[in-house]
Every structure is written in structure tokens, then in C-alpha cells.
Length: 204
Image (cartoon, rainbow, N blue to C red; front, side, top):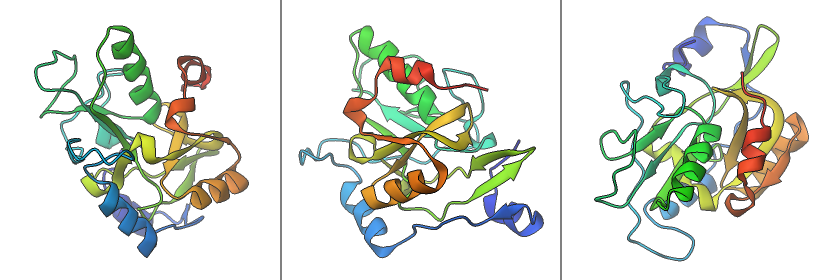
């Protein structure tokens, strides 16, 4: 299921329908402010990278660009020997995989400089239906990713990603609330995400 060229598929397949777009000036401006920094003002955090064709998810071994939904990547301190690092990042096919990896490494005593996840406040996203299931589009550019600490995450909605239920992030809290109103789900921030929450998600 290849979601690499979303625009082409939208023109080809009438089943794809725009549910809501949050591509707004404020969202784009927020992305520019947040890139390369965290809420504390720490400008030492590396900027986000693009997910490339060959990047695979260490957690599930899937090629990231072949799948829908929120993706991401983590950047670990230089010199840390972390599994799955590719081109200086650890890419993930889903936000669920990102947090699963995060907790595994944290328990091993290694923490990332930053985890970047898809920010649906800064992209022109779509929800589409396939075989009776709703999916949200994937976006792989560097500017589509925001520090997870600056996102409101919608969890347990009716919209799936690469591994099933997803944590769908928005840097604009109003966008997150509107998405949850339309598609269901509860709102979490980064610090509220637990291993138990991630393990409760229904993977497919």
C-alpha cells in the first residue's frame, strides 16, 4: 500500500475525499519557529530531517514511505550506539513505533535529543477510506515534522495509520480538538504518553 505520491492518488481515486485541511499561515509559522528548538528555548536540538525512500522502521522493519499515517524520526546524541539509525536519524513508520522505540531505549538508559512526528497542523492532510477503514495521509518532508513535545496527540480515533491506531499530532490545539470532535479520540501531550497507552493501541 504505497502512499508515497499522495497528490497523484487524490487525482486518480475518487474515493479519496478531503475531510478537513488545517494548512494555515499560523501553522506554517509555528513550524518555522519550532524547527530546531524545543519549548524551553534550547536551540541545540537538531532540525528535523526528511524521510527518504530507503528509510525503514527498526521496530517493524517496514519501509516508511510505503505506508499511511503519522511517521517520525528521532535524533540521538552523537556517539550513542542506537539500533536502526540511518543517515543520522532513527526513522519510524508510525507514531506508535516511535514511542515503542523511545520507551525501549529509555529503559536502556538512552534518551533522544528530540523525537519528531508528523504535524498535521502544518500539512494539507486527507482522510480516505479503503476496504471500509479510514486512513490519514502520510507526509515525509522535513517541514512536516515537529518536536513531539510541542504536539497535542489525538489517540484512539477512528482514523488509522501504518500500524493501526495512531497518535495523530497537531501543533495547534484547536486543530487537535476539531479532529477529535470529528473522528473521536482523546488528547494527550508527550509527557502523558506511557508505555501502557502505546501497548493498548490496536495494531493491524
